[in-house]
Image (cartoon, rainbow, N blue to C red; front, top):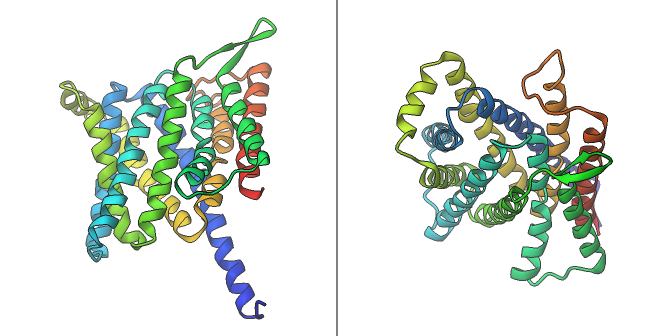
Length: 314
């Protein structure tokens, strides 16, 4: 039985990771919308953007090392932390290649299916059982992911994402693997020790898969424009690392499946932000706002969020 002193402590601890998970979703939604804006208006190419995104994770990690030098963890722990970032970096490469061609409010809900794959991975690698209700929840989530890739056409629907839907589903699986690896690493490391290794892994994945001969000249051209450089530095060197830190903090404090599920609310925040920034008053993104499209997106996001929440509570 919980004592009077013990119960409030447990409630406060739960509220911490719940708040951090929702905060992670909201902050990353801002990052996602800014990423799309940079891709549309300021980045010379998606590949150069991805390389810069990876490299700009490193200054925040370096500052963390200087301010709070971490104890060098065991080889296995830092390798898992590095692998977590590397896998996440590969998923970002896939996601941004698709996002450069499609609406952010269609891309993010598919990535938000990652809690489904966390559940499946737990079944495969940790011998956890999935009930029929879990499989129903998975079907609901995948249906929502499929719907988000459609667009109303003459009373019917047509596939918008096309083959990109498969790419995004692979990216979502990689996100799930990265989150699982992050949780494993945090079992043996502090957050401040783990974060630099993760950042280094993420930078490695982004740079290795996206660097081209034209990257250097395109980077110089982009940073010669004050506005472009400002947006890039603000988003990728400040807001994105902060969002990643909040994400790993939530995963460290709470159950990874539940924390990741709450983070899957990010498409809801993206949907609201991208819609606001596609109005006549703020025409930054130019996403379609017709009634039929908004209805499909809203229903799709509702299905995805419902599915991942069902997986966590069943």
